[in-house]
Length: 373
Ligand code: NAD
Image 1 (cartoon, rainbow, N blue to C red):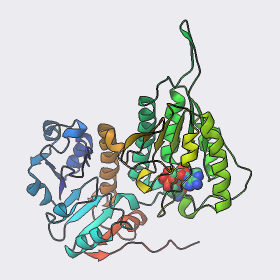
Image 2 (image 1 turned 180 degrees about the vertical axis):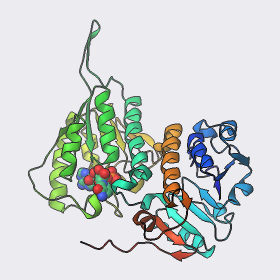
Image 3 (image 1 turned 90 degrees about the horizontal axis):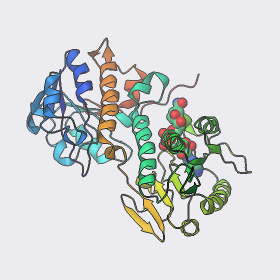
Image 4 (image 1 turned 120 degrees about the horizontal axis):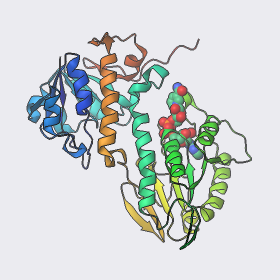
């Protein structure tokens, strides 16, 4: 079986679906791996590094002739045209948001797996690219915040004077939020965080942050361990908490998301206006509309005296790291499809069934709901 790894063509996308290390694992298992010339350049993986582990470097057309195409971003139209009929694709696809893309792949009788639809069960943790990319986004959010902040994160007492530690508020304690908390803590900041899910409290506290609470009790857990949309009363209560926090903290990092819904708006323009000059906001929910009223998705800009980081491509801004981890996720996922590394689609496999979007052109998504025992 041949695998094709094209160079990503989405604007400013620096990641690549396989690292040389992941390529080596797959080549040793007997796959022929075809890498597009220069596909790894932005991640600092040279053509030679791939060749050394047994891959072939080919032009785009040769790569797209492979049996299974491995990608990071879902394909653009120009790429869909290059796929061979009855081919296979594994990449991020977000089928709910991209029905037309799914249709165009179906017309080519393709088989497609979405990395974003892999069930988040224990066995599938090694394939969980949403988590590996979320982790990187959380880390990079803090690095961006620090880079745009005029002071240390850590407190210091030196001959030149006493410096107070920066105060950081993290909203949402999922994968990205927890990574942001851990990173900000390790840089010496005082960190506080809030989440609607009670389960997040212990995880937030174990990263060394203070868990903030509101007086109102409402269960925040929805389907599959994710957050649900909270009542207007609850949102109101948490916004009161954030209004108070905004006056105190130097950095706000927001990560609140609800699957399939626009991101909840939690920080208003007035709250931003109440922040200290020089404060920084990083809105990791920017792509889903943002948690902050003044966020501009994709942009770095200043509103009043508050820097807003609205980048929607934070993992891609740490390309070597994200390609390395994504390469591990996708290669291990590929090897799990079948028995003993023998690629063979088994629809009885919960992970395969959850993530397969098209099977030889037939629509498979959404999968049937698991039977409640
Ligand atoms: P996410 O990216 O969808 O959301 C980020 C965070 O925002 C979540 O923690 C969510 O609770 C929080 N949030 C949503 N609305 C909010 C609001 N109004 N105010 C404050 N916070 C709000 O989530 P994720 O990081 O992908 O995953 C969330 C957690 O769920 C993770 O810890 C993950 O491991 C867990 N999870 C578990 C399972 C499972 O056990 N089967 C499945 C999926 C996710």
